[in-house]
Image (tube, rainbow over all chains, first blue to last red; front, side, top):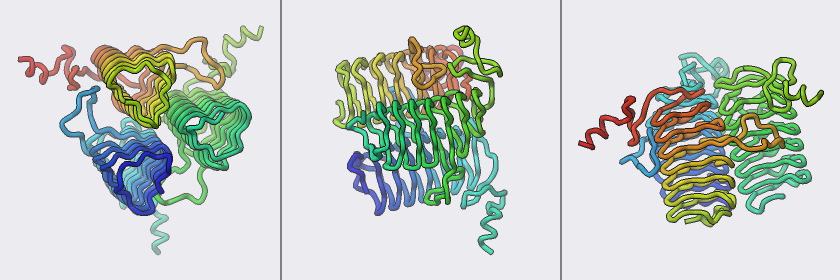
Length: 171
Length: 171
Length: 171
């Protein structure tokens, strides 16, 4: 479903993906299936987005950013692709950032560029991320710091990376 | 006034409320009278907004959020309703947040979910709010901390909750 | 180029300036030439914007804000013009903020009001700016602090304000 109030220029969009009002998506972006792209989102050209991804309102995905399957990006979360921007000075190549499978990027957080955010990690709301984030790590603050681990299900856990709740479900 | 460039699906909007360009308001939202909803605001379904409320540009009001009369919500202020979001995993019920009468939520601040923000409190711009906020309390920072008190008129005051300026006016 | 999906009410726009989808620009704003105003930007009336300015998506420029030539404003960067806002209480005059020639305002940063941001300074992504910023100074954090100097070219430098790279180019 592409809402009639969105300006979607790419044709590379998978099945069952919804794109809502007042989005702008440029013509070389690649977006998977079963995604939910909420209103007022902007997606540039050199962008690959996997399947089952949620991008909440007010987010921009710039050239050089890859988002794998099952990622959640909270509202007004803000990415960058130029470490020291000056108006009308374009870097030879934009910094690459990759958000890996299942990661969650908190609401209104800010990500510096050139980062790897590993699988099923979680970044707290309002954080400023300046470093790579490891697998299932929980980070928050400004600058964001590593404060614990989080299970794939979304519950806190220890470094074993499986929470008590999941263990019980697995029995 | 509902601007013709907004997508407003609810009919529960009070008198003299203005809704500006590129807003999206879903069909069960309830909005009072004399409100000003600026451009690029998104309001979900399970939302009640009182009278004389100002919501500046780029804000989203999610299911489970109640906003009482006379509240000011600054631009790009960001709410949440899921403490540990994962894409395509929806909680049984979203966390409730209530912003009480006369409170002011600073520009680009971030509010975690399940919070009570008491009457006439003020949250500084760019804050990350992780705790309940008491009546007429001033909080700011990341995480936001309680740093003083503020009068209903917007001036700083002590714990008596009435500023010198108001006292003079009352004489 | 004014995109047909923008609502641009001013006619004071210089040559070669692009204004993209879902922008709202009120009728007294003055905007120079060769600017790039990205999608979902809001510009109020009492605003002067110079030449060669980049304003990324999701930014609002309020009454009382002046932006000189060659300024870069990152995505979702948030300005203010009222130190202690209350709904429906308007100050006699809004606080003035000036962003001087060549300055860069980082993505998702927040600026309190009444500030002077000097020439070619740089504010890091996600910062909360509460003080005036000096010429070519680099500030970041919440609250933002002065952490160094930056060359006009965007490289870090010492208090001489010229980086090694520029020196080499000048030889």
